Amino acid sequence: MTAHDCGSAAARAAMFGALISVSHTSTLEQIPDLVAEQAARVGLSDVVIYLADLQQEVLSPLVSRPAPAGSGESGEICIEGTVAGRAFQHGRILPASVRDPRQWWVPLVDGTDRLGVLRIGAPGADEEALRDMERLAGLVALLVVSKRPLSDTYARLVRRRRMSVSAEMEWRLMPQRTFATDRFVISAVMEPAYDVSGDVYDYALEGRTAHLAIFDAMGHDTAAGLTANLALTTLRNSRHEGEGLVRAAERIDEALMGQFGGERFATGVLATLDIPNGELVWVNCGHHPPVIVRRRATIELECDPAPPAGTGLHLPVTECRAQLQPGDRLLLYTDGITEARNRHGEEFGMERFTDFLIRHQADELPVPETLRRLIHHHLDYHERRLRDDATVLLVEWPGTPYTRKEAEALTGVPEGSDIPPPGS
Image 1 (cartoon, rainbow, N blue to C red):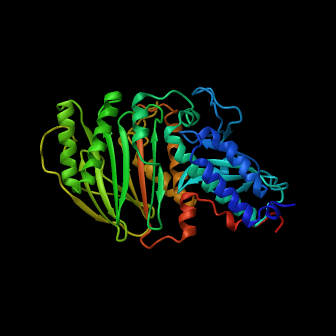
Image 2: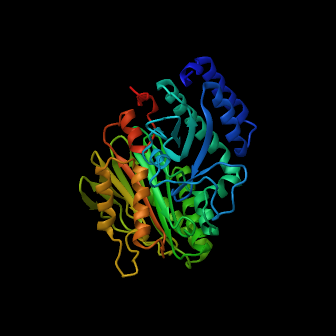
Image 3: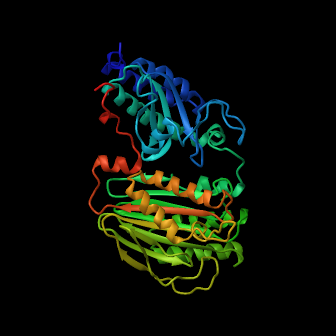
């Protein structure tokens, strides 16, 4: 009997209903057993949840008591060079073995933010079973995300070594790394993941407007983390009060001056993007200007910069504008991505940075996978020892809306319903 034969509409409804009901009073540690028990109702057996680590190098099984940070979990799977890893990287449901597809790897995605994969046993899976896998993974992702803010188990599981206090602050502060609608895709990466001190990125939506920001605070210590935290929180407070970019920049300067008396500052870019028409408005507080990747060329946007926030110089803040064209990629970044030098004294550089993005765009990889590979390439170039934070916030703007399949392909959301059954 196939999974489809077992998976009647009533059984599927019972499975999803039961998972939703029991999740209200469940902990993260209870989710794996609950999922495995309920999935059996539709013929999906041996379900195991695997979560990606912070640097997206390995997939670790969700267990009730993870090993101490840095010691590794039993059953870890490398993302590079494995079927499970390919499912994660490309957002595709894949059989563990093409010749004998008894087990499947299913991407675990919250909206468009990649969490990990599910391993599911389903001998003889047909198209309906594949749809069940995709839907189950979507629900499991929602359950994991709803439980992780209160779970130290999750925090320990996704870390491979000890984390600095500054990095702890930054990761708690920032939004998820990838978000998308049919009108744009936003994705971000940040390294060194366990020791980042003064970099933060931010984005938020308000009607037809996308708010974007990136900050690079002075120093590489806990105080840098506090500076970045105060700058970003002040920006959000200013936005929520309905203030514009110029006033937000002024308020950040005032907040940092009031707290640190001119001894700490942060550079940054604050921006808004009109999502339907592609108009970009931004202010530059002593930071590297935004860059547009247009086809195979790069355009550095010019704007008179104000001083870094926290200097108290009270010089004018200039609001600048640019028009995106369909297919443009907008980059906000910190100097750690371009100016860091390897042991031979060679900078990674803007050309290497943008060339990597252009070449991998041609490969039609999901946007978050492109950034994951970029940051790992950057780490390898510097022999995995960075002296400065390196952060990238990328926005892809299509001009006209994506189709659903285009948006899924760009973000790595699985298309389980389009997978033909084995032997077809």
